Image (tube, rainbow, N blue to C red; front, top):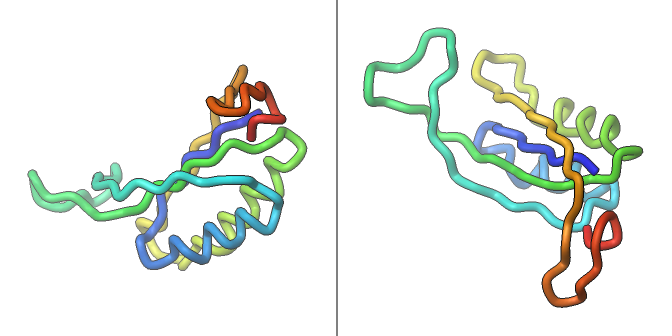
Length: 104
């Protein structure tokens, strides 16, 4: 399993979530975040608003989900965002007690 954290332009949130869901991803978590990129940051103390979409996917779906995120979230301008992928060793659904890929 892999955890995907996609930082994207706020106006594209619903389109990106829809693209992720087309691959059978069960759920997503969305955070409203602020930050600065390494190039041309805003003035000190000022940050750009972005949305972060977090989801966990089975390994075979990873490339398709990443491609979908990139296709939908790319506007061709600087500041479109980043996607980070990390390994998830286990997961637990609290109520059903299912673990691993069956919990996602």
